[in-house]
Length: 274
Image (cartoon, rainbow, N blue to C red; front, side, top):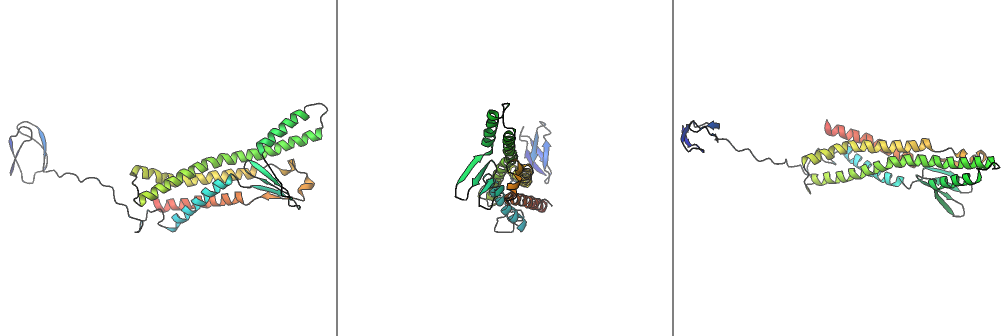
């Protein structure tokens, strides 16, 4: 037996030698603890440094390395999309027209270049139509050609607007994902410490964002391919027969890399969660 003093009334209380837990004083009824070990302080589990084998590290296996490289390429392609050429028309005299996201450029064999925005061409065509074709004696053939001219650039403007609408959130998500990856890498290297809640949120975003980005890129470029206007609205059929026309490799490269990026991200998630 061991005799202790009640911390409340200081009366002497007899307890067994191995007694522990909470007790009530028989004199004053006050509760107290005796022989209860203090809990060990909570400490964050030390992370394995990158110099050792770390199965959760950002570059711990080939799939993660490939996925990181693909992310960098996709990020660059998104930025390049705003100034890339998507469709070209050229003839035997080395004259060509290059259609992009919002504008086009006409290149002539003598070195001259003419560039304009689709929206400006639409305004020009509509203003000209109102001034020249709203009279009873207007030239019907000329006015029909002018209307087709407007419809042609409206088609490219519509296709570019949808692609731009997909590129913008894709670019923002890519930038946020890049920052998130840098922060997680610094945490892994113990250059900074992030809370577990923040790390879990970043990991979840790192799993979902690549799929969303890839969907935006594939859908946007696919819609541009489908919504491109018919060249017959602007060029005569006889002239088209002597021209080389077609999409450049750029939109197809973007879609292929976006698809591979999405697949590699799904494989990476399965490796990390299973």
